[in-house]
Image (cartoon, rainbow, N blue to C red; front, side, top):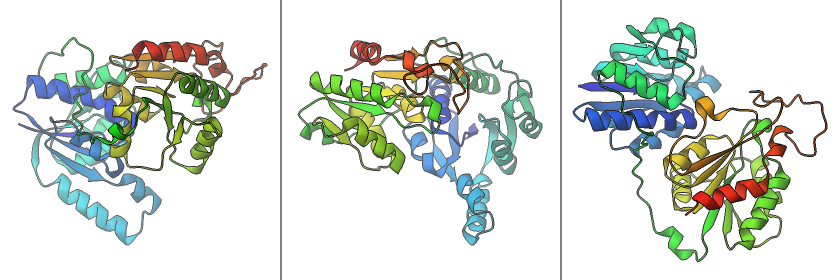
Length: 340
């Protein structure tokens, strides 16, 4: 039996899909799975032994340059890849119009969430069979249930197993000090932990004998990282690197502190001790989930607001106001309980 899985983005959503693949590979190992995914994340399915092949698409680039020659060439190549095999089941685990459209282009019976439990209800019209999975559950649980119902097996009652098998180099061996990774970058301004708190946590880590490695995908994040480190020894601002390389850096770390971002979910999936910080968003439905992780959640009247912009009008000493309640001392204590 051959299955086509469609989950194109984002990194957190992709990580949330891996436990369902692990369930399937454990219970029905005779089933082969191909994965349709955005090119920028195409390495992630290759880390899971339950994936046979990866079909990468470039929808984000297509939207930016819809009428370019490269776009039309890419569409032709994607169509050829999608239709190169017939599938016994096509599972759209994303639930968006764009992902349902990819399912329609492939050959096979299409499955997805029904209109009451899907992210974009119009997408449900594209499936041959729609599956009801209540929305008031974590995303990982919902995808695991979707797989179980489509492919006819009982859902295992265990914590999610991400199943990542990552080959590591020995690069860490040249560093004498243990290190922590601080994932401070996020697109939502309201998800950003106050810089003063990052700075305090950084200084505490250095005093305790750790190096601190900070990433940054753009100039804004790199400038923030430089302000957190300032001129202190013990801090390292990472260069821009591939997702594969970043995964290796995280995997070798002694611990991770992260805002609500995809790399934080990757840290948990890799089994690294992780403290995740939540203010305007709630971890109930899409938060980090698994062993060796702790969530530090803001306690504030308007949290979680689920807003990109903070509308709080009261007095606050840090921004965003809700994350002012997540103190560095509590984060450090939590990290020390779970770090390696």
